[in-house]
Length: 447
Image 1 (tube, rainbow, N blue to C red):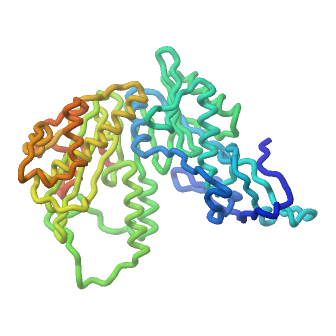
Image 2: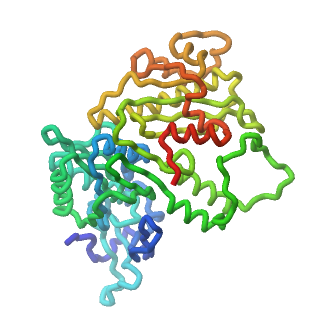
Image 3: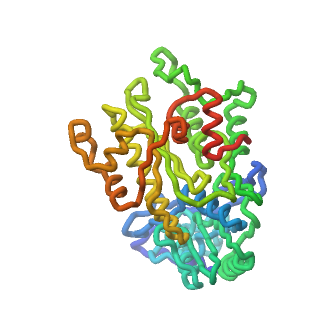
């Protein structure tokens, strides 16, 4: 039994933080309500730093790290399982002196003036995520796991020629191993310490639908897409073969009426959430039978934004045929040449490649000398040679680390024909045939 708090008299020099009940419907991957939850939370916004909380940082898994975990699972051919820690924060012990009011509806009638002194991390406290993470990580480290040097949410336990991997996102845990008994042992280990919900094979995680098959892993969000379309009343609208017309660039309409700001933000936020499983609105397929070499593609448009002439950076990174991460971002600067735009994009792509290289060291893979494919010959020359002239002197120093990476053989830069550069998918609008070809090239499948 957890000793979460103690009923005490409030000291004269202290104050009690308010509490409230939060109600939530928990849904499955089909959007069906499976549980009604009520949680007591502390009104942490009234806390003061240095008085009733101090350090609050706790590592959180990046979505690319989740895709990398699933790509590794598809490569090794093991099943990924999922567990959830019930009331996870209540296992974290806090060091600060914190007092909270008695919960609404549950006040002790004999001690109405008393408050609770908090011993464990209640939901809503600033320090709660950090306290839970320290409890969880310490328990795993004490039981033979070691933490990833790069990714502090990845825990690894080696057993002879096998490996058990565990990734945590706050209180959601995914894990797997080539040997089923290692996964079973880990599940028992977690039940010995915490109150857990074992969910079996991974099928729904952080809004992603995951289908594990014998020939690979399929990631999609089609149920979320259907929910968004219904919410925005777009279920019966006319469909399109491509996301954008190739002969109709987007321009600012000065005469149009202002749109509903809240509706616009809802649409943009929904679309951004969908990019967790795809660069466009389809499903991502991680094949089992493909290599595990790291490769990247870099591309850029030039003055693609018609109203301010800024360019867009695009890049995508693969482990074999498995798309791990991608970038598509409008830059804040105006490039005065195609070469400069391509060079900046290549540097950004290189940064993501180095991150993946470091991540894969946690898995035991050394993927140095990674190939980055670029379709601009001048950009490749600048990377390989420390040229300095009127066309390159304005490039900011921070972009030149790609040269260092090339000199240290962390990357290679290789010329590729523009028709074969799959990062082109993220650059401009295409006709149907080109669009479908690029989709297939990066592992996207129609739902």
